Amino acid sequence: MSTGERPNLPPPMNSIFTDEPITDPLPLYRLRDGLMAVDLLAAAISHLDFFTWLSDHPSTLGAICVHFQIRPRPADVLLTLCYAMGLVTQAGGVFHVTARSREHLVATSPWSLKPYYDTLKNRPQTLEYVEVLRTGRAANWGSSHSAAWAQSMESDAFADEFTAAMDCRGVLLAPALAKKVDLSQHKALLDVAGGSGIYACAFTMRHAHLQTTVFEKPPVDRIAQRAIQRRGLEKRVEVLAGDMFESELPEGFDAVLLSNILHDWDEPVAEALLAKAARALPSGGLLLIHDAFLDAAKTGPLPVAMYSALLMHSTEGRCYSTAEVRIWLERHGLDWAGQYPTAVDRSVILARKI
Image (cartoon, rainbow, N blue to C red):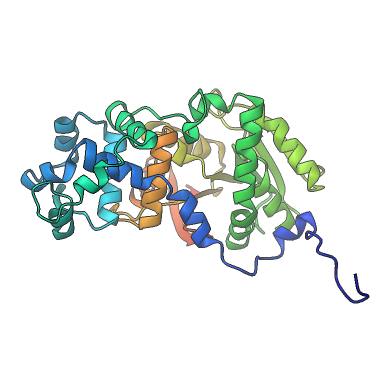
């Protein structure tokens, strides 16, 4: 190596909290997050012949569920995806096909692409979507594990793999969130189900005074402790073992973070978790909900609708709309304090405890 040449060394580990990448990874995130949306669409075209029926029978979500004998959660995700793709429209709660889907997805049209999609109808992921639509139960994570995602997380090996994946995503998202939300007037942040602790670490690096705690169940609590130690922040970021489903959230924090949590669970469970966060906060405390949100009318944006298809397949949840979150906040004594974009189609909703 010549004398002025710099060695190709990785940046210091904690530089991720202060530096930003030179190139934009958004297209790569969207490819991964939208990977399975086409299989959901193929299930609707080839197995349900959804657009042919809807063309002759404009219907509500409930009527669609009854006719096709599918469950409301996956049907909601399917309709949102179709709306965001310009394949259906909605008026007064009744869904109609658009000109595009009438020409190209209705079986009787001379331009129908249904036979083209039918050649791929037996892809394993497409068949899994048929089952999820009909039962409402999540398929196995990534179509490769013997147990559903929530149960797989109790295994050390899967929990380590999955937490590493979420930490990798958090390398970009966590600093973006910490830059967007000013916690200079807050004393203590509780990161609920915080995985590797990367979000707590990002806020700790941004606010030297802030006490941060990751609340996680075993075995992820141990994974978090190791990850925080590798970042040299074990003296500033605490890990508290606990189960957010089995107990109330710990008190003593004037800010609570739910980052990429609600989308893993069906509506009653997601609202119950938000309610627990509200109960844990003191009056004036701040709730941060960081996620990929649909717009209020559930018409998009398309990348979030596609991501919701992946979540519907592999978890018990989906992406929620800002209107749905507003209703939950009002029910549980929280005032909407704004929504702010962070990175890669995510944003943070802030709410104050009344």
